[in-house]
Length: 320
Image (cartoon, rainbow, N blue to C red):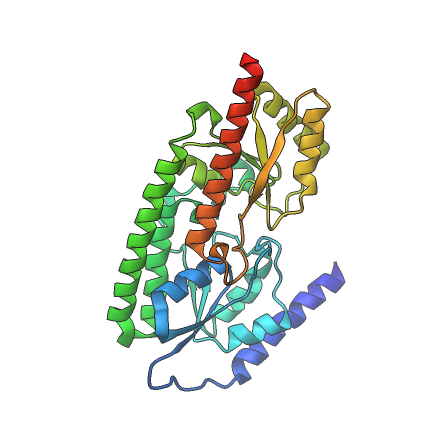
């Protein structure tokens, strides 16, 4: 414990030292803003809104779990050289909280969820009175986040106000079309087949927005480990409701869901792994899943496809 506290103290000293000594280059004539974003989803939004006026660096790449991510020396250097730091907030980057707090005293630092209407946020009792941070799975909530990204860029670069506002509006129209597509796509599933089970409870907003029952083995934060009792309770629910498929996540080890699958099989019911979902991180750069819209579309196709196949197999089993 003493060693961990000492390491954290050293890192905070490094933040202060780098923020003080990293040269602050003047903005070039074209007004390029150095933006550092914690997660891929925020970096993607910043690039859409900022366009050619920004240079965006994301700290957390594909497959990275933001709940557990700790800032390294290279991250601190990037943060210290930024004109704008965009982070999620709502305790998503819990292990980076002190670094972000310290950086906020020295750089323009913006929580992109700072202005979200708290009445629209989920606050499960097991999350110690805090809000569920996974707001990107409700596309309409993410539209509000995009507006907050624009506001943060405008605060740092007032001369670009019209540019950022226009691009945010254009991107919001794309997100509106995405929301409509999701609703049309999931309408193919009967209501009783809309049950989404994943390794951790990241899809609560998705469930509320698009009428799915959502169950996660680990709860909202991956810092809370699932026990044997959690596995058994979830397996019993799967068997009781004859849920055909469960899903793994790109940023969570598969063993937790595989344990649930084994527990259901021991009860005489076979549940399939429906596919891999992107929960807390985007896919690889240059792929469709490397963008927010592409990631959401891929998730929805995976979910609907697996549950529709499961629905067909159950129907065949009952009528066969």
